[in-house]
Each structure stands twice: as C-alpha cells, then as structure tokens.
Image 1 (cartoon, helix red, strand yellow):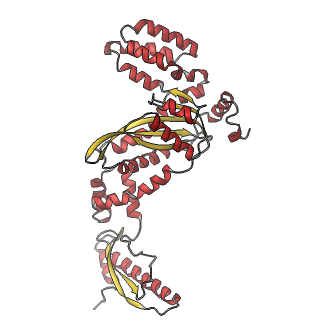
Image 2 (tube, rainbow, N blue to C red):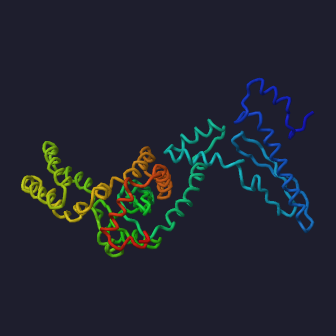
Length: 402
C-alpha cells in the first residue's frame, strides 16, 4: 500500500493518458508539489536545528490549507520544540504558495472589475473561492503604497502644473457625502507628466488650497512657473501666499462650457462662433477687441456670461503673450483629462465608496494606468523650455545649470 505523502507516478501517467489537466484545481501535479514543498520544509528545519547552539529538536507538524495556482492541498509544516524555526519557503501565516494570485487580483482591480467579477475570474482560473472580504484585504495592500506615493519627495521646480477636480460619493458616518478629488498634474524639467498629488475635500477655499500647496512645499517644491486651473475658489489667494511669482492661467475650455450653460440653445452656435474669435485671436489686443464686440452684441441678452468674461479676463488671457508651443499647453486643463478618463473608466460602475481609502486606492491604480502612456516628453519640449527660460528670466537658471 502506498503512503499518503508519496507521489503516485503510475497514477499520474494514467491521468495524462486520460487527458486530466496538469495544473489547477483538478491538476494531477498538485500532490507532487505538496510532497516537494514538505520535503523542502523538512530540509529547512534540519538546517535550522544544525545551527542551534542550545539543544533543540523536532516537535511534530502543523497542518494548514495552501491555496496555489496549481491547486489546493493540506501542507504539513515541521515544528521545533523551542519554537525558533521560522520557515522561509512557506512562511508561518502564508496561505498561498506564491503571490501571483494576489498580483492577479490587484491587476483585475486596476481594470475596474467588481469584487464579484474578480471572484468569479479567480475561481475559474485557479479553482479558488475568494470572498469579498479577502479581496478587500488584498486590495487594501495598495493603501500603504498610496500613502508612500502621496508623501514622496518632489522636484524643486515644475514649469507647468494643471489642477482640476472630479466628484465622487463617499459614505461617512452612515451618510453619503459628495466630495471632490483635486488632481494636480505637473510637467517636470524633462517635459514628462507626473501626478503630484490627489486631495479630497467637501469644500474648496483659500484654507484648503493653502494646505494643498503647503504639502507641495513640504515635499520639496520651491517654484511653479504657470498654474493652469478651472476657476478654483480661493486658489489665487493661496498660491499668492506660497508661490507669489506663479502665473495663473484660467482654463478657456471650462470658461466656454460654463458660458454656454447660460446661453439659449438657438443662440449657442452663433455665440460660440463669436467666442472663437476671442480665444483664437493672434494676440491679447485683438482678443480684447473681439471681447468688446461680444459685449456689445450679447450683453443685453446674456449679461451674466459677459460679466464673467470681463471679471476673469486678466487670468483668461495670460496665454496670449506666449508662442504657440506654450499656448497650446496652458490655455486649457484638458491635459489632465487623460488621468480623469482613467478615473471614470475605473469608477463608472461604482456607487458610493465605503470610505476614502477605497476611493483613493482605485484612483491610484488609474494614475498607474495613465502614466504607462507618458513615455515621451511633451511635443517640442526643448523649444518650449528654452522659451520659458526667456519669459521667466533667472528662475530656470539653477535647474538648467545656465
């Protein structure tokens, strides 16, 4: 009669001939993997006992269920009497033979799959039933990485940063609250895009933005040349306190979208054509003339819209003084949309998030997905940087070693 822990090669041969799978839940190699693993653990213990100075010896075996890519099995791990043996092949609290399953779970989570779909996928692939609680515990491992990412050091100078917000619902104290996630995307001196941070808040204002900008300074940022924003409340006051020399460019695209909300549908096409003559003008002077024409034509019908353009004009029109290579980068916050598209892709099937961490870990995966495409510098970046060095005289000298 064959011992329980002995691998039956004759049976394995019959299984091959019968077409039984090699790996997986019903895989016939699982007993061999079990035997080899247990033999390796015994060898580990023998090595450990041989290194012990004080008298120590074997003390039976403990049993636990191991879930692996090659099927599940009961693993018997040898113990020592003094309890000093700590196996390395399969650690004390380890219940999977390798971390591939966890990596697969995180990868599927990063594609926006629900826990239910991930569980079905893992069971189909590996024959392992994974509960929502286990999946949450696995994906929660991302949180530590997120916290490290949020606190990582930044570069001293970013020529351009974009700031924009996207809203989500989060459960807090039994209630669902709407919170904005503010994304800060920067371009470094090499012309490569980098998300500097994610910040959650129910209310924006000078105090909130002061905290955000203080975080950037604490992480090493000393200067920002141009900040492209979507009319964020309190931001100009906050940035003037910490980065007084930063130029603010309001997003033209957001200004247009907000304007059209107050324009009647029958007039929108004509109104849009008039707006285009403003933001497509060759210079600020011609743009100001077109704004006067817009004012004279539409102010009686849409005074709120015209007033908004007048009040924001100085910060809307900053980009006119720059060459085309700089203009196309800064006149809109659309650059940040690549990140937000990834966010929407991952969260479109989600309702309210149970907490902030559950949202942040998913958004972090979205950032990783978006950044995979940022392999090259911004188009014509060398020329753009040299132009910025002229417009912001002296502020790039140290970093560029001029």
